[in-house]
Length: 453
Image (cartoon, rainbow, N blue to C red; front, side, top):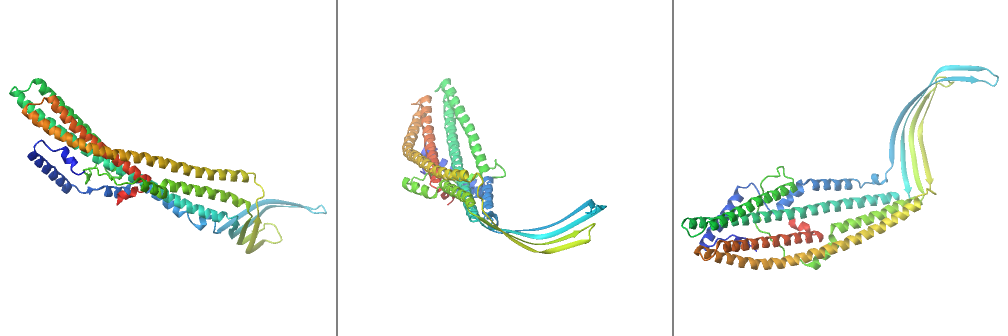
């Protein structure tokens, strides 16, 4: 609720409370005006989707899978080769006639020059070409699903880190408020110690509490910076330490999710289930590729060539031939020793793909049920902690009034302060845990991209 965070930090007196609220509002306004850009969750996600390296890599891989869907890559188109060659042979020829006459010629150099175009085309290969094209289309779809999974993981991770940054900043303000309370208490104790109303023990205890709260505040600054660095890293910023001004100062929880609607969307649009369906289809196509070997094949060969032969010792000094040639091949693989084994294994792979899909669906149903239970419990805790915060705030105000009147000891005042800070911490944790459950439910249901809207 929007009023809670202000209630966490209201001072003891109403007049000072108004001054405090106005100073906080003025500080926020000045900060927003001075910052170069104020980020919302949507702008963080948009910038991250444009710059994040993992997202860019996944999109490039998706583009590669899309580029592979061509008739040539599937084997539908013929191949055309242009080749030329030259060869020469230096030899010594010895001859002997039927009458016994012998002769020899040395230094005989024969030459051959050839060039030609060769066309090869598989007209039919047991439907292998058609199956290959369908497989390339499935791989393109798988690339799209993989890119979607990468995007959804990124959106979920950045959204969680964004609200973690909000949480850490709220906690930092709470600790700063605790330091201001301890500092005020220390001032009061020092003033009364000088006039003899408080003992040195009271003064030392006030100093210990102030130092403890200051130490907590310093440690929290480190956590805020760590979350900031992680956000800049996810957004692929050039400087991971660059300050980031965000609009949200509260963790707003969506309490309107419905389990039935989430389950329905999960079964229809969950990216992991869609990927499992693609893998099952690919396993079926692998079997069809192997079954193509059961059919005959028809191949066409054609070409046009030129050949020149030069003879070093012959009645004809040279010979030239050129012209087209055409041929066709019809064949079938009768036995290769592996066909049946490979096809049996391919059928097993199809069964494994289907079982994997069923296992994944069951796992997602279990995750959805777990996150839904945690989501509902955290919503109930959030309502309870809101009531506790109101009571702790009123208790702290009463304790401070009694402390100023001298009716309450420093230890009892510290307990009232600690009770208020603990209430602030519990409600903050409940808000963040509920948000994490909400993010997980949206991702499982395939609706995580709604955070971009």
